[in-house]
Length: 378
Image 1 (cartoon, rainbow, N blue to C red):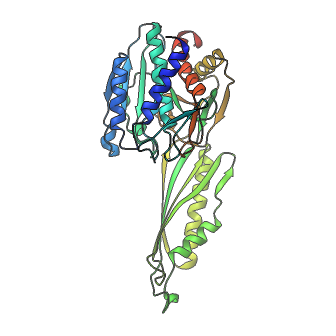
Image 2 (image 1 turned 90 degrees about the vertical axis):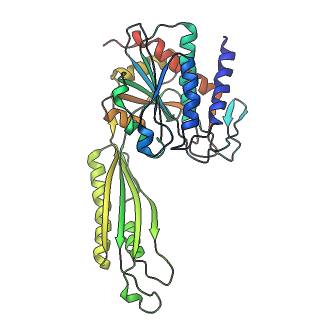
Image 3 (image 1 turned 135 degrees about the vertical axis):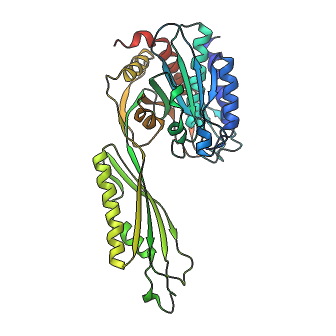
């Protein structure tokens, strides 16, 4: 098959993928589609029990293809779920760019990565290239807390080096470092009263929350640390002093020490404001995922650099403020990097990807597999 035909096949498959709705916990139809595609390529496909844990209609898809050339086993990963709105996606192709019709997201996050992986492997198979063991893991519920990666049956994972194709940005960009994230929930307990007759008898939980938030350092704290108030819920009516308010927030940092300090600062702001007004506050802080940090000399990074340079890509090593399945994999003892594949404006109805970038991402997968034996000397 010539290059133009292969690219058109890749585009056609990507368009088919984004037309299959797969919001978090409803990835079943898309998983069934992928199972058929991968079994046709010779993969043994199975599903784990992560879907039951997450309340979804399917588990993670784990596809394994044995190889005989003795090279290092490799794993490629993307997530099957997309953010909403993702029902009835109508992709449009114009001027070499793929978009939705503007009423939905496109779903390139992360179906562009999946399409690139499937096409890259297909080309390896068609060309008869010798390779080592390959595993493809397509996770569920990444967009709502990486529940698929957290619930993955790691006993079925034989590869230790992982390439995750899930980063926004230009081809050639490798995310070596990602932050820890803490979820923060504060419930403020005030005292109710009639707002017109005896407001002085009440303690407004809304006022306590406002005082606490006004004192917090939020948004960009420093180059490594961010914090944000996500939601405030409480109150019943304007004539009732609000008795209870729930505030949800998050903090992230590449430094665990800085994250702990930001958590302590936000907790202290809630507690001090509650004391001043005579209210009570319960603050719960939970670690959503741990930070990871790889070096330029890690074998998986060197493999990426070798493949990218072979393709003539300009390489960039970056840290990211976002979480991904990489955080979970690295915490579980795998070595995972997140690779950019050219997606833009993800999580919006303006999301897009260039056909040229989709093609390069497929070639990158193909090259990583083909050069696996020779690219890294231990």
